[in-house]
Length: 340
Image 1 (tube, one colour):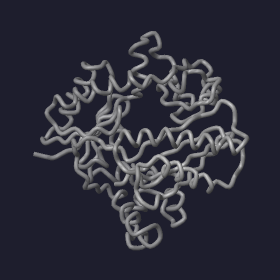
Image 2 (tube, rainbow, N blue to C red):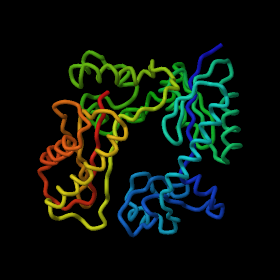
Image 3 (cartoon, rainbow, N blue to C red):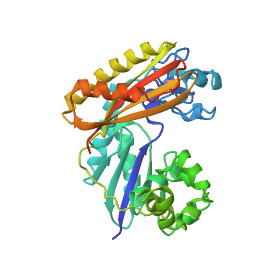
Image 4 (cartoon, helix red, strand yellow):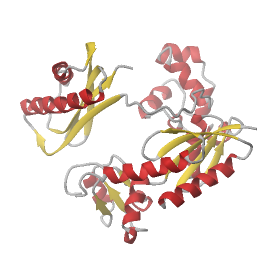
């Protein structure tokens, strides 16, 4: 019997949930974000496949989404609804009697034993559809990394298997940022070393990358490109590593004294969340999005971990001093990172 990891990913989850309660929207471009008013500032939380054909993606400003897809239906975020549907999905997965590791509202890993993981994948899709009316894609791999990437090749509503035997056939010629965990900045840095594809990175010397990028990160990147991942599927409850608050302003903040007051306000709200969580904070990070849409972050590590509100506020203000630009601000955020 083989041992497999399955990655379940709900297709266009938030948009699909909205279409379920508004069947008349099926087949139309749907965009969910903010309070649903594209004339206001805010970003896209998710877009239906029909809207994505117009270049509308998560994180895009709502106003830009409206320009790209003027016929789209814009809807407000309904967090309670999505959480409720997600709970039903995860309950359906747990009903299989397998270890289920929840990644978020719309994703989970499952550990599976057997010689026919595709049969289990099909059963998962049937169970999710019966419980919620939603479609999902299932990726199959020998580890979590392979399963996660396999899902992308199975979308929408399909099943795809990716293993060590097929890894380079499927991914070898793809750019390194096709890998789960590598973003545009790391890809650009690797390109400076002559590493452009997954195969290039897999063949790189881990010791050389350790010296160039870091003793832990360099070898990890090589293992990633080789499709290796030893992390187990665990059903331990998810423990957030941080908590944060942010606000998008409908009018730019031109006065940086106002910016300072807003950071204090956000830090106090975060401190309330920290108190409810009951854990200590090691670092405070401030996020500033300048007009029109340039985002920077700076953090401050606290001298000693604490949950004291005044210390969290001090950390946020200290992080704010690291922003040298005094341009108009459209968004502010404060995030507290817990002791790990």
